[in-house]
Image (cartoon, rainbow, N blue to C red):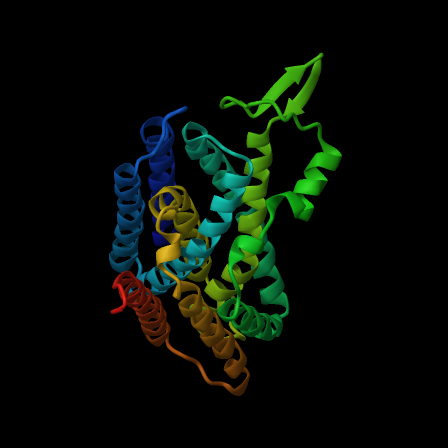
Length: 324
């Protein structure tokens, strides 16, 4: 039986994903092992290289346009995920998660987040196919989100213990304050209790879902040719694959950036400008104005690179002692 190009592409994506997860679970995130900065760098390069390799596969197996859409969507998701990292760090610090337990907890939380994202993407695609005008609502939402993010103050105000998710977990389940020692469940007096590691996993997934409310409409806008178009099979492939590749790389990115998050002071401003640009892109389609994916890719690269370089410049200026 001859396979179609779509079947070959999905099969390749599934094999690559399954192989990468087996490698990650078996070799790169062994239980009770800590992850050094060097190891995190190699793991980050592994996931980024895997995404680039899949992009090249799409270039030759599909079309250069599909590959460009994937790379643009992946870059957008990857940059938005950086904003998750600081919140993740606050959660791990609040619950005093050991270095040896952090890797596995992150991986479990991320896998759980992927399941929720798949559900949300499916619902979002169905809603947009039925009511294409909802994209204009998303456009205004991204404008508001971008504005809020641009002027957002220090995220240290975020208190994991005061979140609704944490309160709901404690209300619905028995949670033990005992040292988890790598365990997610323990039995006390014949009753099953969640450990703080389980709470951390649920909170990581909840935070990622909250961020997905921004990222999914953003990627949808990037891959669609026109607001009135129905999603093609290629569009759906790009949305799912870019999301999954970006989320799977979160764990290694966490360990790579946890000591350097404060060195990119203006990165969130760069991301905010991109969100505002995509919000405008969604809204002007009402007037029949379509921005090509190549221009979108250029804007994303320029904003992210510019904000990172400006952050590095201001850090160097702070490091230079003023003349007395």
